[in-house]
Image 1 (spheres, rainbow, N blue to C red):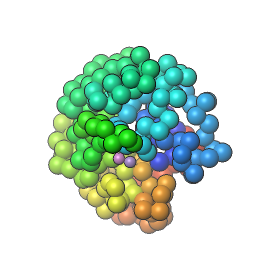
Image 2 (cartoon, rainbow, N blue to C red):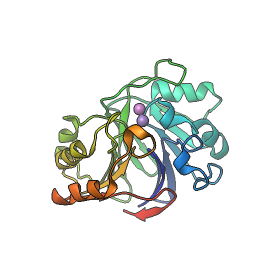
Image 3 (tube, rainbow, N blue to C red):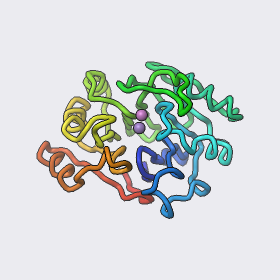
Length: 228
Ligand code: NI
Ligand code: MN
């Protein structure tokens, strides 16, 4: 399984030859300028965690270009449908569905969710992906530390957790370490940091904090890939 980081909370996962793209926020992201080109990002599936601008900014453009199937909560997916996207798969919290790359389950996130124009975006979610390659990935989306993570860790072997670490709008580093403990997961990919002044972090200190807890925090430079 390969991960490519596109900045903020946007990343691609390549699973069993299929490209999954999450939460595209590239053209408005100053850190991604000149590094990532939205016209060359591959996507067979587009997964959207919630309706906030910093998770859907380039969703319509990428869905139109690639024809990717859009997966997310009902309200977000139907909003995409209204923008002319027809390849959709609406779901809701707690529900799971078997796709050709594996099973996707929508996990509750503790956050908010409205579209840039203020309209209701349904409940925010994270995604648990049980890949056909045998590795389970949990992307928490934007969320606080929640007891939900204990349930996930209790009943699923999570190979890698993709967690927000920027604080202010989501969990910060200390809570992300606790999340990793609840998830019983030693490998964490950090997202949702450094994009704005309010979520700037000390990367070395963050990595050290995870290390002291016996965990690995992977911070991938924008535009680069890692094998997970
Ligand atoms: Ni958000
Ligand atoms: Mn966000």
